[in-house]
Length: 230
Image (tube, rainbow, N blue to C red):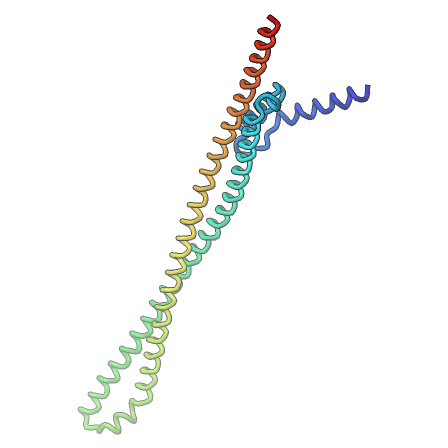
């Protein structure tokens, strides 16, 4: 009595397992392959078509591994793509900020250049009024030195800004290349999923073949027995 009950529970568990699928992306193909292998086993393929049945099982295992690998790769590629997009966005923001900073410094440089031009004009005016070079130098030297120092500072800052622009441009290019790589990984993962689907279908056909080979072997054996009995 207890043995029958345990057997009934085992059959019920097997039935429930048969209704589910281990595949997330291809539940129908996976379920069909699993059912086909179950049917082949029930028909006696383990004995009469063992090699074909083992091939079906191996193909099913390969399909599952391919799907798992594709799923991992796709998740990693999606994360890589999100990070690359964020890097590209940050690079765009920095490029905009540095470009505005460059414009501000160029405006400051123009102010100093205009100031120096006016000092030169002022020096000519003073010279025309009869002042000698020493007096002109004494009157304008401090302001001119300050303007030239500011101009050199502006030029140095512009040089550093140019280098920063080159750097950020390279960072943006790197982020774009990373996006391309992530998209390529996604495409590869999708193709690997298609391979997984094809393997599930192949496993189903192999299992069907194992079942047919089993039936043929049984028919041949029965025919042989009938012939022998005759």
